[in-house]
Length: 245
Image (cartoon, rainbow, N blue to C red; front, side, top):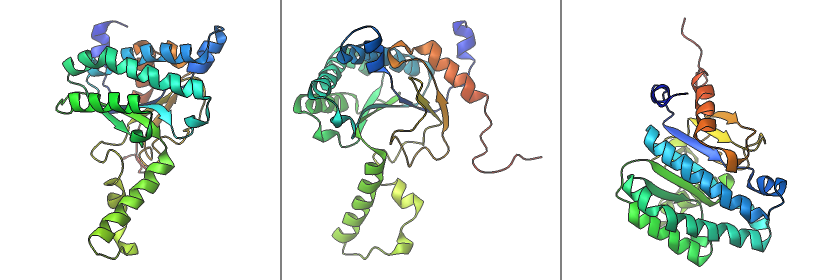
């Protein structure tokens, strides 16, 4: 496909990606799993750059889940070292491209060097108004919903108000999510051939379109992303309603 043809393809406002397959990519090549995460970082660089250039307004990637702590200490430490390297390597270009980096999740609980690096990226790009690049770190969808209810209860208690059942509605809950100002994802992509949501954006995915790619994340690039977008564009979203005759 030519660049001119790509420019004529409408892009979703918000794309979310479950970046799966780093470990399997490395294992197939007889490499340590951390080598797969390093290769996955390179794939992420290309996808962020492409989304920024293509007019996508929001990109959310699943970088580290609340369940990923179950992995070996060496792999977990390797993931966060790679994250620090990614920010050090890419922050100048991200800032130049007007990208705003926004971690979502309990990211203050990640190792100190990684948390410090992420805070630097947040501060450096906070005034940018281009692509909003959400990085889900120490993130879990169930935890996000539970945290939202905790915030609501804390706010009512601090105000000396009773939280009544009739006070709770979808808008109130949405306002207390990690990124309350972001629209729900239009398209959620999972790479690596698996077909499950894995505790990702459980509240926000109610009417997202899901596209699954067999390509392992380190091999996933703009061409594969556009294949997913074309599949998305071929679908008719009714949001629970019926077609008008």
